[in-house]
Every structure is written in C-alpha cells, then in structure tokens.
Image 1 (tube, rainbow, N blue to C red):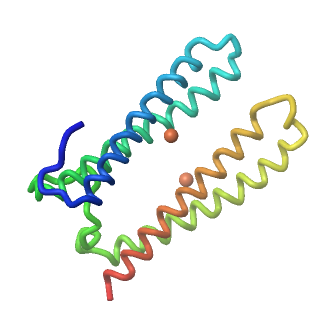
Image 2 (spheres, helix red, strand yellow; image 1 turned 180 degrees about the vertical axis):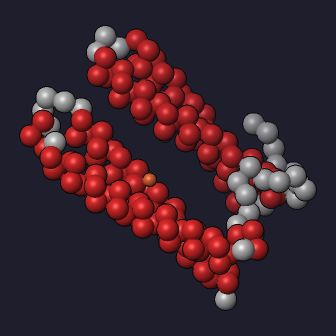
Length: 159
Ligand SMILES: [Fe+2]
Ligand SMILES: [Fe+2]
C-alpha cells in the first residue's frame, strides 16, 4: 500500500481504512456487475444494475477521500480530489439563495413521490414500480441532506 509521507499515526490509520475499504467496495462492485450481466432474471439484472451505479460512485468517493487525505498530509499544492469548502466561492449569499430554491424543488418532489407511492401501493407485489418510487424518495432525502449542509455552512461563512 502507498505510504503517506509525514503522516501522524491516526492519519496513517485513517488512510489504511480508506484504502482497504476502497478494495472491498471494488469487490462488491464486481459481484453486482456479474449479477447485472448474467442473472437469468431480468428483474434482478435491472435492480443489480441500479445498485451497481451506486457502488461505482462509492468506490470513487473512497478513492477521492484517500487521495484528499494524502494531498492534505503531504501538503500537495495540487487541488485535492475532495475540494475544500473554502468560502463557497466567496459568494456565499448566492449559494444560500440557490440552496433555498433547490430545497423548495426537492421538497415538492418528495411530496409528489409520496403521492405516487401511495397510488402504486396496490401493485406492490406484482411490479417493481413502487420500489423504484421508494428509492427515489430516498435519493430525494439525500439531496435535501446535501443542500441543507451547503446552506448551513454557507450561511455561517457569511457572518
Ligand atoms: Fe457500497
Ligand atoms: Fe432530487
């Protein structure tokens, strides 16, 4: 495994955790890729392909985190794979305004998805549709979490 130059013990340990988890994520990814390509069930292939998209992202995020830590510890002047929050581009007010608009949209989206989910309830056993709507509700909750983080942090950097 690549070493960190000038790292403290906890930085070494964190780096080891991040890189070993990246390997695990890579293995899971291969399993899903396999199922998505070869399962005799088209429904299972479809759902595995959905998970695979997430796993590809997880794999990338772990790699970014490890690389950002390395960049930080080694005082690399290159821009890190995970950007610094900085001052939200020195225009935190605009960032806050944008998050408010986007949050409104996401919340409206969440309401619509909830409505759709209840419409599809009767089909729960026969189709994947309700599951897919539920997954989008979970994504929407994730988007709201991201936007709330940005809004909170950008608001703080204005004061
Ligand atoms: Fe994962
Ligand atoms: Fe969204």
